[in-house]
Image (tube, rainbow, N blue to C red; front, side, top):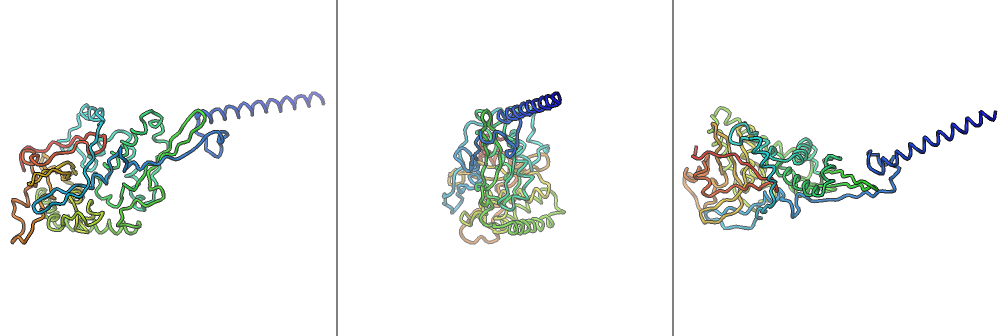
Length: 401
């Protein structure tokens, strides 16, 4: 009997040692962050702190927002002298290694090999692409204005580095601007109302970072839209206009299609700086019939994308006949093996008085399918448009089409 009791005691002691050993190992793995233990099962739960860092990274001093790009100073044309809008930020410290890698990889932006629907995306670094991809995957959910795009521990490694936070901010700036410029159909999101949220968990010997993007409890829809239903209605309205245009040009050749879209926007859109938030997107141009240069350019790309004509939005500066140089936006289109510039906004000048027969052709097509010899006389590309990413624009034809 005594031996049985001794065996039982020995067994109990052995089990206790094993349990203590396993608990110690589990505790150490948890405390040192070797394994990611769910909070409710974490023994070390009382030994770490957790807090959330919120960055309105899309609208901080360090980052250019789409709002900054959208909000342009007016290119003053004949009989127009309004300069009330914001200037584009000057960006320092470009990621030269990105440019070098692009050159090393021999990316050819002068041919049709470029995907104009992913033109800006193609120039992002790996972090920017991850941010862009997840936002694009959830663009349907973004219609709610409250959906939070969760990245989990996707950026934990980079945030462990000394400059990781700044690298991620730069990547976010570039990614979200690229998303809007590549996809003018996402006109319902006001990304100046979106936040980069970083949930930081600090344990005794480790720190982990979980990242998400959202409105932090507030809607990030453009102020004209209050619900998913209103967004879907707006999308349908814009698509109906686009489909009407496409049906009219379906049997035309490529150049005539481009010309028709160019003329449609000139005839149906009025340049208006004070018509509300939609002046910077395709909805403003096609539905509200009021836009500034960004709205013209986005509407032009929006329609040409469906016609499968390569088209990108370009931002920079323009110098008008009054010798005033200010922020501006236009398009490049790929026609018969070459890229050409189209500036729909400047082909729709504000002119006082009635013109019998409408605009003369030398005004209406002054910036239509232009080559660099003429176009760059008063247009300059902004190669630092996307924050710290240096852009490589397509090389446009020297001569006009």
